Length: 83
Image 1: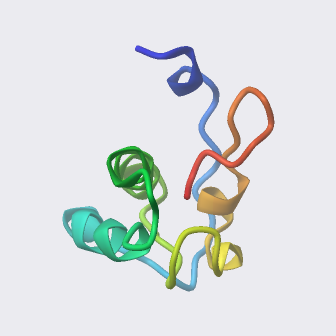
Image 2: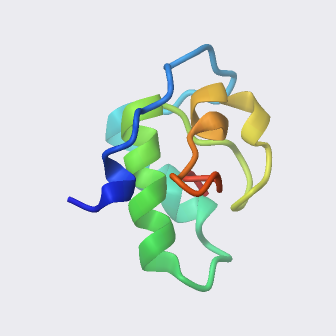
């Protein structure tokens, strides 16, 4: 398992953009539609969605404030983990 996957996961908080785990795939396809590195984007989006149970509406980087868990999950280097 990659070291970036071993860090502490954020707390699941309230969200105004909930996504049931069984709908993460569809939500992430939409979120990553404009991203050049789709495979990587989809991997991280699905990982975040499965934990946080939300995906912000719009494309990568947009509207992250609707889900604090998704917005506050960072890599070891401090960058955003969730697209």
